[in-house]
Image (tube, rainbow, N blue to C red; front, side, top):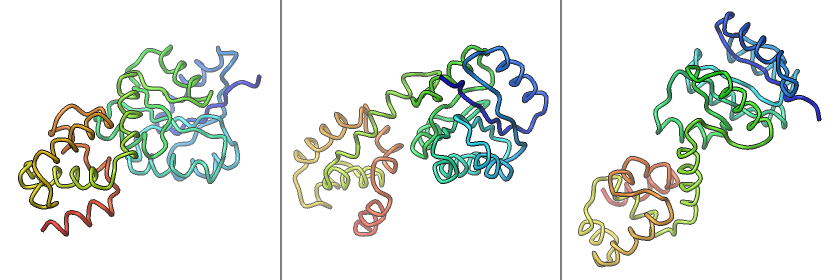
Length: 216
């Protein structure tokens, strides 16, 4: 089996040098090169076609996510990993939804980084907090929400109580409670606050706008 090739998009030369030395000591990983910024990364990915692209956030999270989202167009074999100092939970889930396959903090020990590279290089998802990965895949089950359940989520995001939701959707408060029970079961979220925070992730943005407009 060929070693997993790693391309680094990293602005700090000393970090790149350290990564190259670490990978040189691994039989199953190989250093495929580095670029200093996102602009250079697009061309390098198309040319090198690495198994893994390790992307730091010096160019900003939005730019890093655009690069990773475009990987399949440049190289069908390449998987993206964010190499971060820290990343808030809500941005973590956004990144996973955008196609990021791994998120590894620069403060972690080298064995964690190598584990991440190996796992992602084999086609799986890796994070140092496995519970966050589990939560993400639970939320993917939100695609099974019914249209009515999505309407309930959208109205909760607008701060409505059960009675207001019932009046808005012309159903009973008891029916709203039943819908909420099913929503919590499908998404793995625990309460209304969590639902309000992550609701936009669970409901198609066009539908969210449609329900919000109709409720105004």
